Length: 282
Length: 293
Image 1 (cartoon, one colour):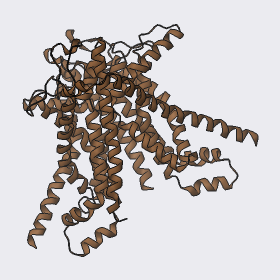
Image 2 (cartoon, each protein chain N blue to C red):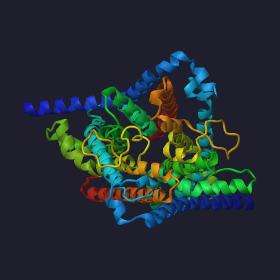
Image 3 (cartoon, chains in turn cyan, orange):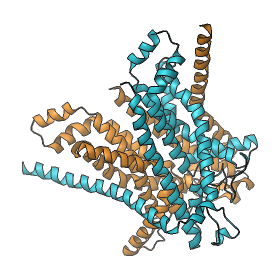
Image 4 (cartoon, one colour):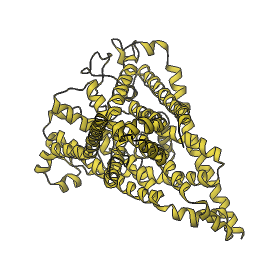
């Protein structure tokens, strides 16, 4: 009898220790990045682009990376929503047979798990084929590939939750499939669309491997789709590798900005999906 | 009236095109990489490429063996560190924790999953690398800290949100009645978990681990920043290694000038894609079976 209780106790201790370890490490990551970043962050860094001798520790900031990252992420978001929304709607059973829907979900899961470096390499092949150099457009295309499965899968999860009765009522009134989709299902899926879009945005803005070859890096803010573009993750990646402390400071600052953006998006997605779910029929 | 039907038809057709596109992306990527890596595949046998350790791009020798070993080892270390901790955490959250705390932990774990890999990498450089260096000193094996172990630790941290959240979901799908039946037979709570809950969640936990593995296998930037990147088979966990994704990321810019180099690197991307996809398909099928239940 007693040994059974002891076994339970021992495992419980292990479990709590594990959980404390996981949460502690997470807290440690956030605290270290915030402390290091905050001590090296200043206003000039946010609004200036690099000046001459920047990589030797002279003046300038990371505005090029901040703006570049936003361009990349918003561009890719636009592109992937354009394809993602219709595909997510198409996964309803009015449009696809069970077999094809299963296969599509499998494809999406494979794409979700595909390493972003592979998207980067593939994006680069496409760019070479089209005769593009590393540019904003190339980065947007590679990132859009990365975002697409994330977005579709999370929107589709919510669309599947739509009560069938609701759709049937709509059909009983003589609507076509697309009318029901755009009036009934779209409204039901709104919280899912919010989370899906924001999740994809968060993943996209933080990804470095896919834009490493496709977007390039530059000290300037791009003026057209065909200019190379800097980005926050790559700013962290390139600047931490230098031996000069001032430049490393900027890597910490870039990391902090990136972290703040990602945390804000995460928060926003929770709030928005909560707000939007008020209008849902369950 | 007629117009509405036409609109419906057009919408359905364009959606179908989208679906066809999504289904073909995987094949397109594989095909693109295969075409680009074809030159090297015709010159050298695939076994030679995979099992040779001679990596001298300038002399035209491309042996992937050290990189494959490096990837496997760093992933293995990550899994050994992550799996027990993550499973124990998931079991606690699912079975013992108050539901409010569980929801809070879920939110935190979701946020952890959303943190970009460069940030994990940077944290690795600031915290893990010095830690490993100190550990190496204490154990009398001098190391720079940029090592297999440091890479494994960071990967373990990066995959834990996935493993915890998937196994938590799976554990929650086990019906309460199953637990209650066991408890009614006089088991302790832990015995009910061990014999009933874990047994019926086995498939799902397996796929959680597989998903974690495939994520770790393809992770690039964070590993690249801390694993040391020396193309040699590491002799101990304190030695640097050079995983496949890091190879690809590090050399892509310069490879254009050397014939076959481009081809060799894209072959490594193809290998990566095939291995990771195999794991993802396995996990997907296992999870689908649970969902159908």
